Length: 155
Image (cartoon, rainbow, N blue to C red; front, top):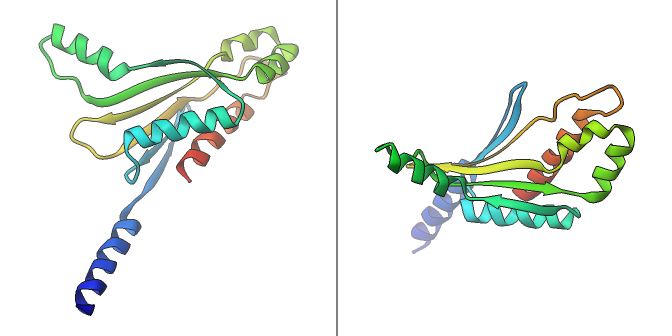
């Protein structure tokens, strides 16, 4: 009996160690690929984290469903099992940015996507890096703000 408990404990512990979060950064976007959270759980966590940080969710578009319809019309298979695009905005941040430059209206709403490719247990959350609009606004601070929300949701 003790052997079974030890083996079970080792399997559970090995599963926890196997769970992994991979961060990918390119000049254009930042992604987190996770293997230990379901799509639904990650979507819920991101939504909660946005609300806790005072962001309004402006829209949620089911991109997997939209792509499925297009795929059927083209007689092809969609590559997404799940996918959602979330637009979000925080009026106080928008106001502060607009005071620096009216061009920052391009940042509102901010956007991220959460998706899961068919036949994969990994879930990815990604966002495009904010473009540098002018010298008055630090676009890296926008990226850091979004990344902070994502990492808090993954903890």
